[in-house]
Image 1 (cartoon, rainbow, N blue to C red):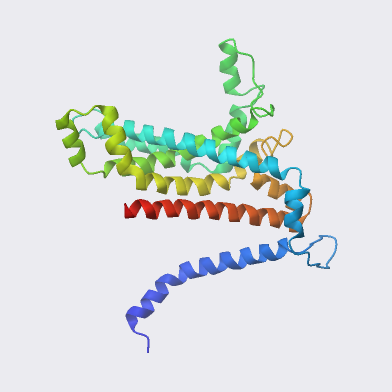
Image 2: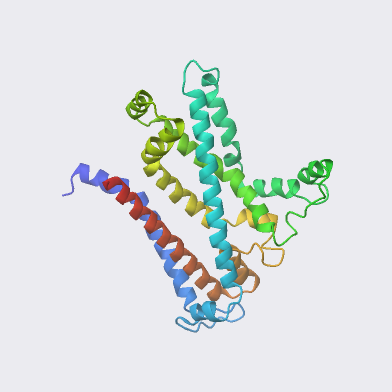
Length: 297
């Protein structure tokens, strides 16, 4: 007979088990789709094996460009969000950590104000920035023209459209990095800082030899969370550019959407989705390996 304690243990793990089984079932069906030749105009299913995957690497002319754009998107977003979020958190912590500072009583207010962008729905963020970056009546171009700078087609110029869309991700993603960094900075042990102060260490020495090494586990957690979120972005790009102009903002999530829903090539779209999922999962595994290695050091 199962004991009450064991039954409670199984019941607590049941929700997680349901989520895992649901994901594996859905992903298995997507893999099944990717190995078939699904035609929306025919009920006949033809097994083609790896033919759709071979098509992606040999005949899909947009896949290499989408893959490169995705790497660029993830790398720049992660780098800028990480740097900005950490230094804003460090600034807020230094200004408010001293109870005698006039800013200390406003820490919660400052934190709340900084977090507002991350509380906004992604679709709403896309609409906001679509207005802000509008070439004709957008406020950004309005103020640039006041300074004598000609209007810039932020979303219509293929050379800068991707970077313009990155502003939305930077605006809504950096506050989350800030929050995690601030939480980590506030719980760091004080003894290393007191010893450094006695030894006469400079602020830069304290930053590079004490703060950054102590924050390493938190940094890896932030990279993991932000990598997963940034690599699956779709809504902001869909609202702002729809993958254009041309294919200049068509990262892999957009390319999967176009292949699946616009071109009605269900199996090929599923194959691209599988490759994207495998790539993201592999990177997550690498980050988790670094996290376990960091814990053992």
